[in-house]
Length: 121
Image 1 (spheres, rainbow, N blue to C red):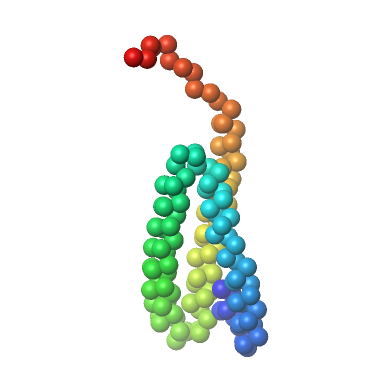
Image 2: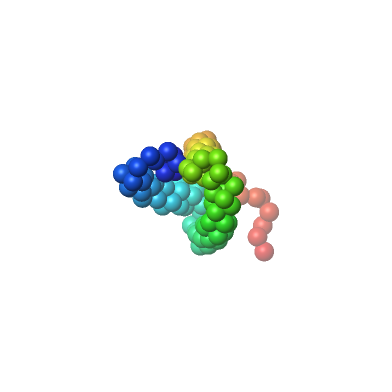
């Protein structure tokens, strides 16, 4: 988005499109990390929830992107893309928090549940 925002010529736009297409690899990476964090019996719920969130983000994002562009085009033509780059930075920070918290929780996997002494009827 930064390349789109500061592009002085069409060549920069082509490079930005190429870099942006590589950035789409982040979606499967996020799914893989979340899949490893989720028990097997809840995988369907996880992927259903991810699909719902992706659809909501796509719907809201297109409307929000258009509104940001309309509001900022008079200041600077590429300002909308710079704002969207800021949103991506926030998403990157949240993703890093997710990965770090996942690594902290891996140490808890060694604990076992002690069976209760009550008889099962």
